[in-house]
Amino acid sequence: MTQQEAIKNIDDILDSPYLCDESIDYQLTTDDIECLEMAKKALEKQIPKKPILQGKYVFVCPFCKQDLGIEEEDISVYDMPTPKHCCHCGQALDWSDTE
Image (tube, rainbow, N blue to C red; front, side, top):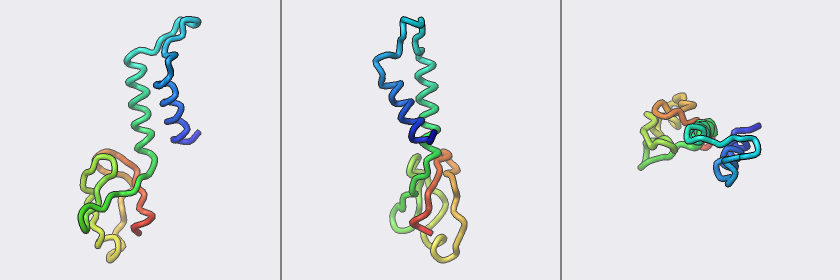
């Protein structure tokens, strides 16, 4: 199962009107729902997203919008290694169009 498929399954569960199944005497609790939402958020961060070029030179994280500490000149001129994840929030990064 891919991250996208797992996210869709979580969305299907959270959007379902059947959060309670009386036939098996089970109901999702608030903690269950919070856990699923946290899992979805973590899965979404594993899917690489393109950094955002802010202004002319500075790249920021597409999730938390924090400075990634990489400038466009660093990538094109010095072949500086780019981070695979944001050091602030853990979002996976896709640099394929910038390198």
